[in-house]
Length: 550
Image 1 (cartoon, rainbow, N blue to C red):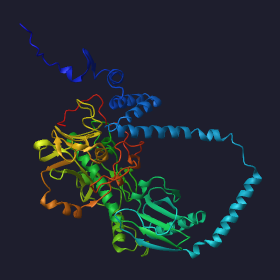
Image 2: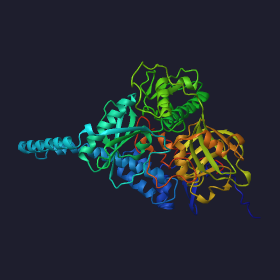
Image 3: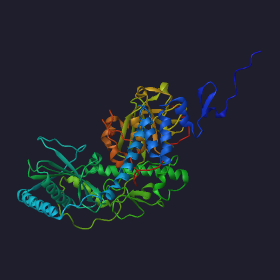
Image 4: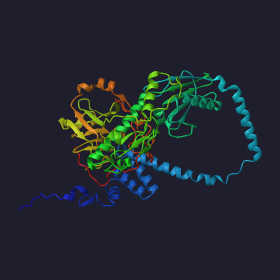
């Protein structure tokens, strides 16, 4: 009689990969990923990415870069953007190390003779004297206005080479002083570039200096609160425009509420707020947030234990509410003054001084972050109070497999591993058996084709992931709610560019914005380098296999 072929299931079978015949690989093998490349798939992006992480941890940069580049040879892949960000970070670190050796090498260069130095200084003095005679500031006026556009831009009706510059303006500087500062800097720059268009973007900063530097990162434009433009060959006026001030307030409110959402989740799980806000930036599974937002009015992400109105944030773990625990380090008078300037349409009028502002903190109400999924529109939206931060197309469950109702983000993970490689894409926001996760199958986005999860393109989930804190409430609806119809939602909420909340380390150049949404262009979920605002924590979960619906 024949023997039965059914065998009892072995619990460890989930960790075994069948190669051929009786040869298997165990996922718990320390050399698992190297064996995958040797025996199973020499181009496996997951195996190359994990090996690169391993070599980077050992300090073997060249080996890590080799495997990161091998990862990028496979596209599309959930590890493509993670590898790209890691390569940029390692190359930047290598560049900083090389630049540190340059001063030592420069000691061997020949010294310029004294007579040549004197000759050069004399010529420079003569040039400055002549420039002062022809382009003196006495003949240059200024035109100041308040400008409230959707974005930063202008129409140029003459041919000119635009030279953009960045000016750090100390937080709290009166508008009248800002105008004089921009006027003087524009005139000074024009002396060396008389035929160019000088454009200076001013950002509020805790930096004490007021020096002008070339603008090398386009993302600073979204943080500017004032722009000065001057072209001496065409116009004798320095045009100064104060940008949309209300948008800066919304950015600060949104940033505060993202952190408060994470703090509320931490307190519900641990019984109290953390001793330091940096605890929210821990490695997986305690990665409540991915970065600390900048306080937009001051341009600072510094956290203080007490309120002094100097910009940044205040964190007091003994606070009785989210509003009392974390709030902007900005006076109420400063916040109201910015709004009043925008409403009045006159940035320079007034006495510029007057009585000292009331030193009470700006009270920002707590409106937790929320994700909303509209099934019949196949879209997902991220909001924080009155700010609409992101909107992307999604794929949903076939035959109604995606349930309606309210859920909570309980897990945040980059490059999650499933039973099959890349099944959950570049990142995932878990909520029990469901998850919002990436996919490389573009055809499933915008349709009902998943097993129940909410699918997004890998570029979109990479952009959305760092903005969604742990504890975010997710509401899945069959249709748009009557009180928040598409037109009402857009009119009641202001679209805040998502990249304006992120530190500069997160920004990546993008060919085009995300189609069909009011959100910003996709950015990487991995910072290029660590900073106080950009979390250096590891948000991946190596060795863990997730079992969401898919």
